[in-house]
Image 1 (spheres, rainbow, N blue to C red):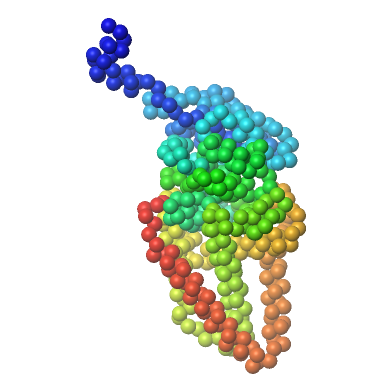
Image 2 (tube, rainbow, N blue to C red; image 1 turned 60 degrees about the horizontal axis):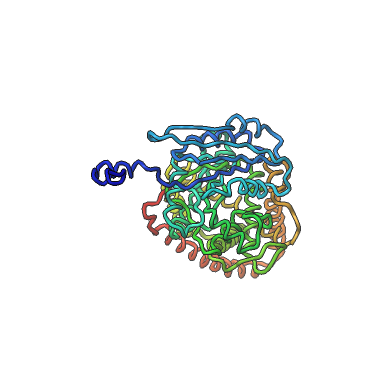
Length: 470
């Protein structure tokens, strides 16, 4: 009797032999671009080696670094075999120091791409991002479940436990709230992610190759844009693939702990987004204002513009009214901040890993309002840089800010002070009749705009979160 005949004669033995056959498992190549990440690269690699699903290979691409990133990463280099759920998993860590690299992070990512081209998926991880143990497993399951998906981003937050003092915890709480609101927006849009953040995202190699072919690129990432991850996300979407945010995978990214560093990061992000939104062509970057991935960007910019206008107008009208003893308090003005507190608190309560600092930040309003003013400074500085057409290296500016150099972050404060002084001088030169007329027109205009904002916040407050946790 042949082997097949003997197996079919014993069905139980046949099914056991089929189940014991090795199943196909997609391969995941992990790429970690690292620039002066000595403080965090060890934790990043420990996080990856603690995953329930190990990447099949891990490449650390060190570029332009002057610290001990290479030395620390090299302690993890070599093969690693671990046991997960009774089965052995194997990976190998490689550390590459590519030295001076004019293309910075983009160059490091593309170098890593060339090393993992034979894999099914590319997992991009920043050199300061750690993930929960099941993050890679969740990302693989989600992207493998639908061939239409070109990339999936983890749910991002920031670990706030290491920070002490006043400024750093405040800024981290603001960034955590900002991430939470952004993540929830994308969750409620069918989990369609406008930007596959490079901090911890998985990409289909097939989608990346399609992007390269469609855009006549030799590499997936190009240095044309200040926000290489946003541009790639647009290109993946244009190639006919979906860009998603994970329902389960979570990762903590590196936060900015000083006003200077936060300004450098946020201005670069905002500037790059504006460049993609603006019609026409700036250098090698083609503006795509009608691209579906940019709809949320347009709403964010419109919202920031209105927020800036109402706050400036409120302060000017309040001071002007008090100066001529014409201010009359109405309890109705308490409604907008009350709705804002409820909305901020609801977002805070939707955070899976929230703590008391997140709730206090949202519920007391003042910290959230101060952080909003800081963000408005970033917003207006990015737009002014863009409209001035001044050629600046925002990557270098961010790196400089993170090193503690530069005072550009003070520009919005100086401008606001000068505007207030000029407005005050002009106000007191006006006749009382003209002053009264301005107030008579100004307060109703502000009231209408604020009422629309309040209705918008109320709609967001009443919108179901469908059980999502950010």
